[in-house]
Amino acid sequence: MDGNYELKYEAMRAQIAADISSGLKPHEPLPSERKLMATYGVSRMTVRRALALLVDDGLVYSRRGSGTYVADPAMISKSLSLTSFSEDVRERGMTPGARSQQVRRLPAEADVAADLALSPGAPVVHLERVRTADGLPLCIEEVWLPADLVPANFAEGAVTSLYDTLSDLGIEPEMASQTIRATVVNVEQATQLDVAPHSAAFSVSRTTYAANARPIERAHSLYRADRYDFTFSIHRGA
Ligand code: GLP
Image 1 (cartoon, rainbow, N blue to C red):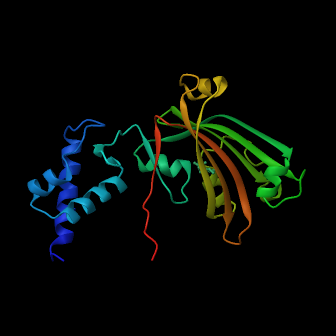
Image 2: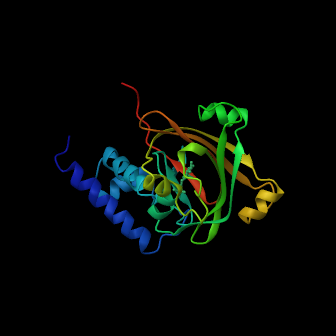
């Protein structure tokens, strides 16, 4: 392998990042791999590595079989690690927020109880919020927590970051199982998210566990598909 490999892809990454900040428009295509190889005098592997890093940086996105495009900074790219909404939004240089918060104590329905390893009817805290990025609605989020996990006055004030609040209680999310589905919003959800009825959305269900494998939340989030996407590295199995 070329000894300067790392230097070359880092230089290329920095140059393309500079080009983007000095005027490339969101969704504008980058030159083809072949053109980039010629322009930078580097191998295909170097080009691919630089582009993969720019994808991780959230500066570009790629479409299979089509090419690489400048990312839209209004989009929130969710990397598939166990991050909170607030962390995802901050990572993109925006300010996370929450509004229309509603908190209720309820008996767990069978499916929520099963996910939280509780008996059906056991008390849970249900927290519902519209999550915002720079004040604009991005997602409707519902979370169910085992009631014995949190104090009785939990969420009396506004909860800005649930994970920070849990962390203050000594509860750290360790891993989660998550399912992402495509859907459309109904009329009520459209109003909350400020989009047209039947707009595309991602429905994300997550059950989160603490290090001792105890389930600590069951969450459902409905994200506007025009402002949110998922990016992840995938590794070919050994
Ligand atoms: C994401 C997850 C939720 C989690 C939330 C916490 O949206 N899908 O399961 O409750 O992050 O985010 P925050 O700490 O900003 O409230």
